[in-house]
Image 1 (cartoon, helix red, strand yellow):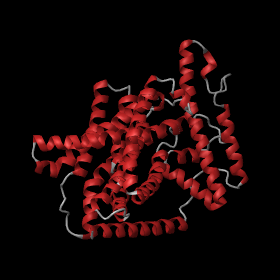
Image 2: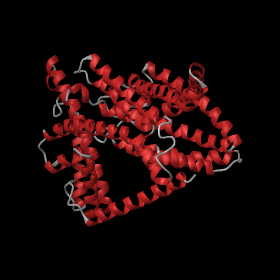
Image 3: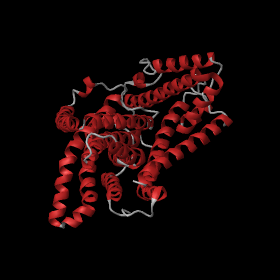
Image 4: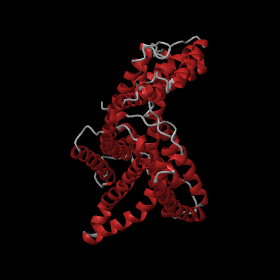
Length: 443
């Protein structure tokens, strides 16, 4: 992996630093314009259907929480600044949504004029919405690059920011659709259409909807920005391919294909969801896995050069490479030392991740210093002591873990409790999914 692809940016970007970038003010102006436009739409909805609007905001707001946590956790080793995550989410929810609502309608009308009303009725949503919405969301990832280029230093960063833009768009659009369903029902300020929309567009479709499409586009932008070891034509081609993949996935999702279903009832509805949504989901999961593994290998290799078991052991190096193994290490600590043990292992892993990023950055500074003849200033253990604080933090976390009788953050043997919990959770999830599918399939 090239240094350009994983160069860690200085941690803790703040709005004050962003404000010094001219592009930030352009983005801020667009966000303000989008906020005003969406506030006008929200005001009309709330005045006409106050109960339904409140219900939609609560339901989809709650849905955003697990999605946010999962997306933010994707890049555990080098977390993105919260300011930029909020900026990405806001772009999707305010700018992309406010632009897409009128633009999609206008493009659908154009399809009717250039083609036919029948074509627009069948394929208008499939042709207009993806073209407008994926372009607007892609510009959101580009905006993050322009505002904070140093924070986009891996393909996985692009995935995270793209997914956050998509999540913001998904939540706000679903709220508008939910209240729109109330208006179409024509039965007054009722919440039943909101619940139906939540089950279909949120609970069942959310996994492979805008968050997924945004992640795919973000991967392409991330590749374009960080893979300087590849030819420009290759990087641009990869970014275009990612955009076309997101666009095609969105077209398939909105298309009338399988509109008549593959039968009746819950199994038929599940079949349609899987046939339309599973291919892009599998694609982005493969891309995320590859990007995560490349980044993890790079950072873990830096930690391995320390050869200090007080900072990280061989078992912890292995656990830190994988999200599943990190979770297994926390679970094992929880079994041995309770909730405090689980929390202590997570804090140790976070401290080790920060140390890995710092070591990577100072290693590059060391190379720069050697080339410029400044000697020791860039070395991790040089006079600057740039990673001393992070090393001390890791040692303190390990001391706390030792006091709990669990000195090493490694994954233990799989326990019967975890197996039983997994089985029960799976059964409950299937039952909830079946109830939702049955309710919508019979509607």
